[in-house]
Length: 306
Image (cartoon, rainbow, N blue to C red; front, side, top):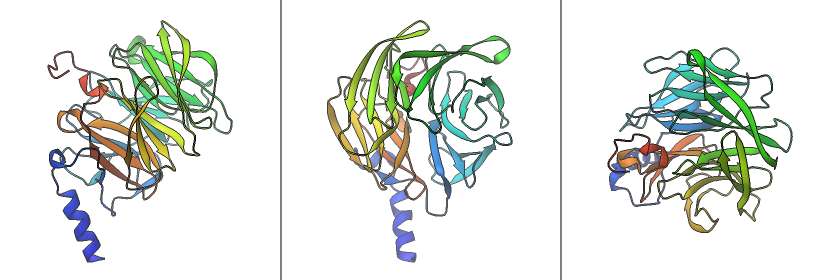
């Protein structure tokens, strides 16, 4: 056991910049225990990583930049359990609360969440993505069904949001969601159909639905993110892989994970070129370096690298 732990510590000590591209390594150690609901990774402007359900349901864990150990950052309101997390340009952290049908928000410098948007019409808000103007898009799968939909939540009055349902077709069980770099296309994964779809955003409508990719095996697409070139990184449960797609659905790369059930992923780290992956199989976070930075790491208009 001591030899195994020593090996884990040695691997964790390798500087992320020195890691071989597209080779995943474990980030959080065995003593950091997340629940089976480990999900929703997101990175703030200081490169701190946030993940839902550390130690028990209803918490937000944090891994500080340059470290590997997790700590409890916040506890959600009673009965709330988080799924997706996203940050806006001002540093607000949004959390999809699938138990209480909320989108919660942590204002900068605060560790207590408040309700940003609530609707009794929510099925079960899951993954989120956010546009540069602060508009949120939320996947909303049926909790025990085979279909889902998308919500658009725009900034409203008094620091809250105003939401409407967007539907271009009868969708499968919506899961991962992200925008193209120009913000004009919304990519949505469907877990039960094993498909990735693209929609053009036309104001309050989703139009021109286009099938990007249907995976032939039994693995379900879960979380997804885009990079600045528009490639789509898809965490595929049961495959043990993150698959990289071009916008036309061409598979350009598959990255083998340390566990078989990657649930979600996000970009961050030095240069925005580290991909953090939440892993249900073993309940830890792993990471790999990529050759281009993530779309969200270019949220600042003053970032010359973008």
